[in-house]
Amino acid sequence: MSLVILDRDGVINQDSDAFVKSPEEWLPIPGSIEAIAKLCKSGYQVAIATNQSGIARGYFTVETLTAMHNKMEQLVNQAGGNIAAIAYCPHGPDDNCNCRKPKPGLIYQLAQQLQFNPQETWVVGDSLRDLQAAEAAGCKPTLVTTGKGQSTLKKLPELSYDVPVFKDLAEFTRALLKQD
Image (cartoon, rainbow, N blue to C red; front, side):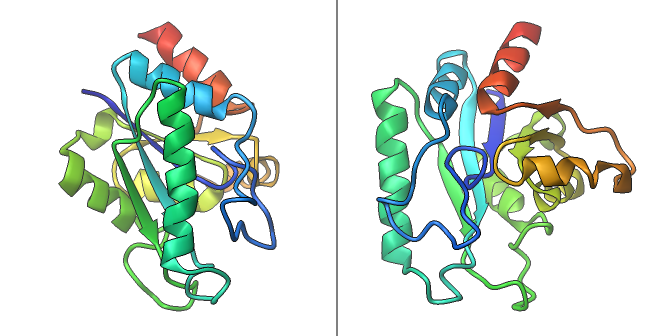
């Protein structure tokens, strides 16, 4: 089964420079929940790889993060989809862990759990970190211009590889399913 790995903030839900700190602040980007459900109904597994340094910074707890993820999973389930796995990095930018994107640790965690072929796996993100983690893990990076995607577009010339760009997760999903 093919897998699509999604970043969370800015791809599935609205991002915030002040951090998304509660289930009430976790608001889906229009069309994102339906796009996940469409991927699932078309035979794709969907997983999440997300940096959540708000935990290390003391902005929210692991329990609050779990509540946010429960809300996300509930919405996806109601739309007819399923999230196969969620990998998150709770560390801060200076913790020098192996899981914080742009390092590929979260993708490796998902690989252990879900047994997928990286060369056949899309990673959808809105930041340069997402794209770099995908490339480091041997996956296919793609950018959406929601969240931080507009500012990331300006950084694409820094990359030594081409990255497909889509308006949002719904547009990526339509394009992917059209090529299948």
